[in-house]
Image (cartoon, rainbow, N blue to C red):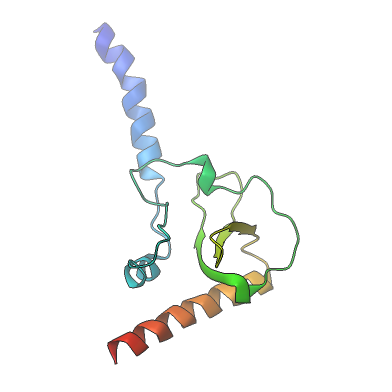
Length: 120
């Protein structure tokens, strides 16, 4: 009985953490599997602090320098978008900012265009 009592909180915690994983940006992951960037979200069922943004600075996003992005999970303390630059750096941004949304839309469109060109 003592083993069951000790194991129960662990099982509840594992279930809670595993259920918080959400697949965001799934079509983009399928389209760019050949790229070196790996989307961390949804892997292994656990949340990593490196996939969160501790603070969001209000600075301009230069979309021309970005090659990909992903949205942080709901397990993070604040919602954010993490852009991956062409130099493999990560940049945190506010997902509610209009400029950030435009950049996300532009990157999605570019990935679709690249795939169409490869298939043709």
